[in-house]
Length: 467
Image (tube, rainbow, N blue to C red; front, side):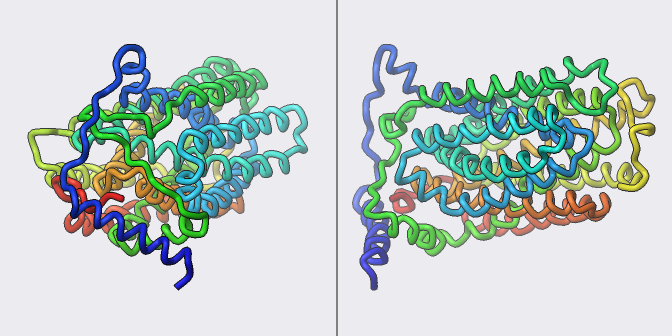
């Protein structure tokens, strides 16, 4: 056995010995004065939400317009394929990188790629032949986004107590999705009278300023190892013997908690549906101002969806955690079939070859209202899906390092699915094929998650499941 393997084995053994030696965690006094406000878990999760509001929130607003706000969606589809390909690779190891650098620094590094990506669309608006720059910026963003989302996931799941995880995830998701709402409102307002089929330079400049603000906000995040939860427990500090040990710890996590693998199909599908929603529905059959309004209501619906499932379902204290886990599963599974059955009847009416600007639906069209409601329900489904996935991971552990690894798996597999479907869209795969694969994968993700819910989710996380 190599030294790294021995260290990794010792790391796993330490978790068990700690759990068997002391079942009750130490209780610490929370800080006073301004530090009590600054180091309060709710305030830090809210600040984390505003960092993501400014950076990935603007990315979401741009993506939600279909084609990144461009008339020709091919460059954006290829950029997203490159983005998620690099995200998939670096996401697999980002949990380890997060554990070594620390969540605070990893989050700060992760914010930098979003400004470059937004700027690339401004460049292509000025120089239409610069599509290769958009694709390259997408690949670069994939590296930075892997860092940001792994740090975000580990912090969001580590700060709350077991009874607070649903509402903390809901708070973060609501603030984060405000970024999509604000960005969509900016795009809608600036392009309300546009007939160009793509957004103007002012929209991209506004998004660029907001992403730079997000970089600044990340500097003010607190050191997570100074955080004391509302019940007096500390976030668990992890020792890191070596880089090689940390990479082996990925496989140690799979060995010690193999039920995480039953969530892998759910992880894979978790961003797969964006391609059909944004490019093959919103970007395909609506005018630019209708796309902006659709985007606005989509991200607004996400706020309500995340708060509803997080507070009303997953953190409902009247019921045991296992009951809440099954209730969340039933709700998300039902939404998958309600929304996709509805969407199927719309998808039957058009193809990639039949769509054209002349037939696009405008906000004043008589059939617009029915079509925009589908976007609202897709927003609800997406927020419920993401919130439930994070809640399930949070139900498996309270350990920051272990949650970092789980989040790395989540974002890596999510990106694998996204890279494939965005590339399929870029090469012109029929809309119906992409839609049916989206429906099948989301349904399969929920079916494969059910055994984990039944066998792995307990009413409380045992002490011997922590580092």
